[in-house]
Image (tube, rainbow, N blue to C red; front, side, top):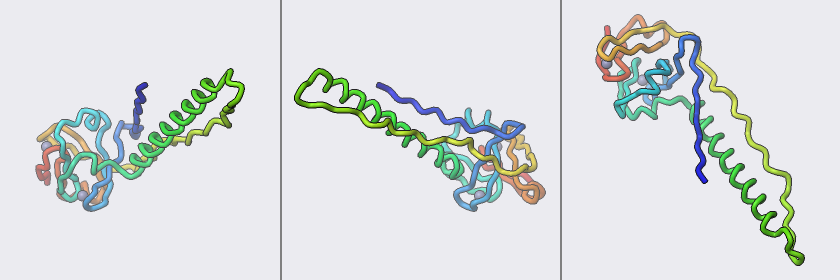
Length: 150
Ligand SMILES: [Zn+2]
Ligand SMILES: [Zn+2]
C-alpha cells in the first residue's frame, strides 16, 4: 500500500508563491513554475544574498501543511488498521472487536500568501522574484545563482 502526499502551494494572481529566508527571515516570492522546476540544490536569498538548501527557503506555513498531511496519513493508517481488525475478528465467537468512531482528519487550509511585492527580473537565469518594495530599489541577488543585481 502506497501513500502519496501531494502538496500544492497556491500562488498569487501572477502565480508567485511565498518563500522565507532562513538567514535574514525576510520574505520574498518566486514564481510557482520556477519553484516546480528548480534545478540547483541550493537557492540564494534575493534580499541578503545568502545561499542554502532550497528547502530552507520554504516558509513555515508550508511545513505546517506538510505536518498536517503527515498527521492525516497516520489517521488513515489507524482507521484502516481498525477496520482490518474488525474484519479479522468477524465470525469469531469468543472474541469481538468493534471499531470505534473513525478518527477525524485535520482540515488543511490553503497556504496563506504574503502581501503584494514588487517584481524584479534576473537576466542571468531568466527568472523573476517578488521582493518588498524597499528591497526592489536596492541591491538584490538572483535566487538561482546568487549574482548581484543592482
Ligand atoms: Zn535573506
Ligand atoms: Zn542567476
